[in-house]
Image 1 (cartoon, rainbow, N blue to C red):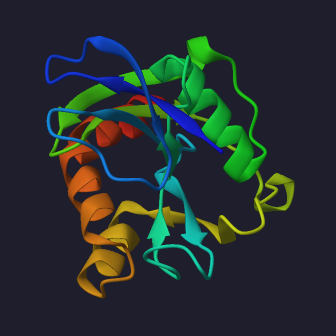
Image 2 (cartoon, rainbow, N blue to C red; image 1 turned 30 degrees about the horizontal axis):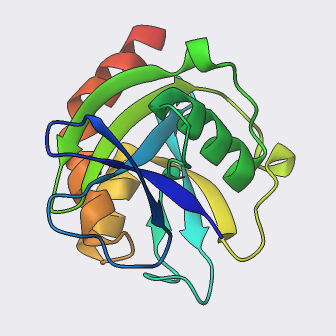
Length: 170
């Protein structure tokens, strides 16, 4: 049973815990982290959601819910490792932005890591595909609805910052 910390609307910890896959109460918020992995050569790493998951078969960046007691940075390090096998120290992750919706705070990060596909290990039940794609390919995948709407929205918001990092590497 996975537990998550409950935050208030101002992102203060309430001291209460939420059980995963149960409804959030009014004024309760969880923390979700996302990371855009880029190679410094113009490509982003995407994984495909496995069968049985919501939005199965769609492509996304790595991420997930912070567990109770985890900071945002601890959660993003763990989620990337769990979903891809990529191990990176916390100080290599760059914070991009934070947003809030009805029941979640979303922290967005990026990480430069040029990892060969053969070195990526997918988490069964979570992901069943992985690939490096260009920014143009991401736009095409969004148009084809191969990336779910929330991830597409997050990509479009992060794209200017991600492009700056890509071009800074050239």
